[in-house]
Amino acid sequence: MSAPQQMLFAEAAAPGNASHGIVVLPGIGNWTVPAGVTTLQVEAIGGGGNTGVISIRGGGGGGAYAKTNAIRVTPGSSFYYSSAAQNDSWGNTSNVAPSSTVTGVLAKTGLNGGAYLGGSGGSSGSCIGDVAYSGGKGGDGNSLDTSGGGGGGGSAGPTGIGQKGGNSNNSTSGGGGGGGANAGLSTAGADASTTNGAAGGTGGQGTIGGSGATSSVAARAGSNTDGNGGGGGAMSNNLYGANGGRETITGWGNTYGPGAGGGGGGGTGTPAGGGASTGVGGGGGGAGASGGSANGIGTPGIVVITY
Image 1: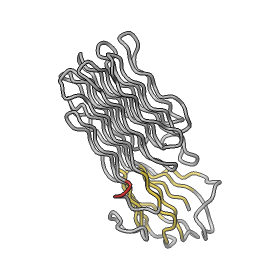
Image 2: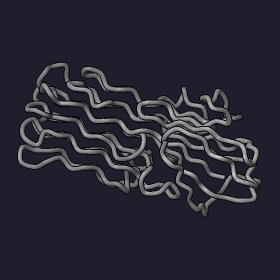
Image 3: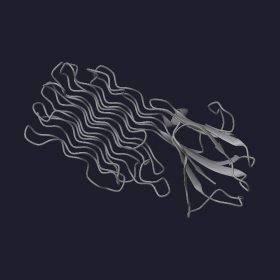
Image 4: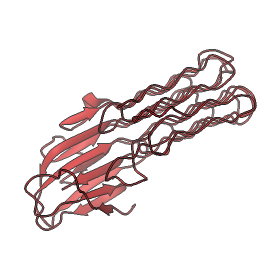
């Protein structure tokens, strides 16, 4: 179990509490409600899709975001949370996923990519929260065995949806770019239509995503302040898709911002792996078509408590 991260919180807190703060809760466990605290605001991002499996060309979907504004709690009681990889993320007053906003919040996971079709992003309609946004769909690879992989979908976040990963459109394409995270100014990853990899999507603050690979230049990773997507791998040489970045959210620290999708792997050569995400809930890029290549690993989600 990862240790909770207790941080100062200077913005609007949950009403009616004698003390205020923000706690970032990775992994699975429980948190003790402090003295003087009777109301929690709880946010969650579901895990990103894709598991590092060989020859899966579809990009993983990004995790959804959900927020419940006011959960009544008792000082000294336990609040339970779970944010495991490739799983829904939730927090609840009892040690089970919630069924209502009265006691908790739940954000859906993005789905793993298929043989060449991208996984769906976590659906806002299946979340539990007063506010919910869907994660981005993973990009598609091509059904032919020579194509690159689709880019991973970006996770949703406090400002909106995650963006779609780019496709690898034909039998001679490089990998698709990873989708940007957390709405704002974010965009979908670009589709690959040449032997070069495609660019990652723009991040939530408007920074352009990582560039796709060429035969002589490796793909560029996304930024770890803006949550933009990783570039896709090329058809030959520089085959790896680059990692997607994460967006920095005030109070969440430098590790746990919404994650952009990883770039898809290039189409020929061994290995041609898809990129991962460095933020929470970002989808991994699909593998290139070559034997021995693996798709990128989607990242676990997170639960964040404001009191």
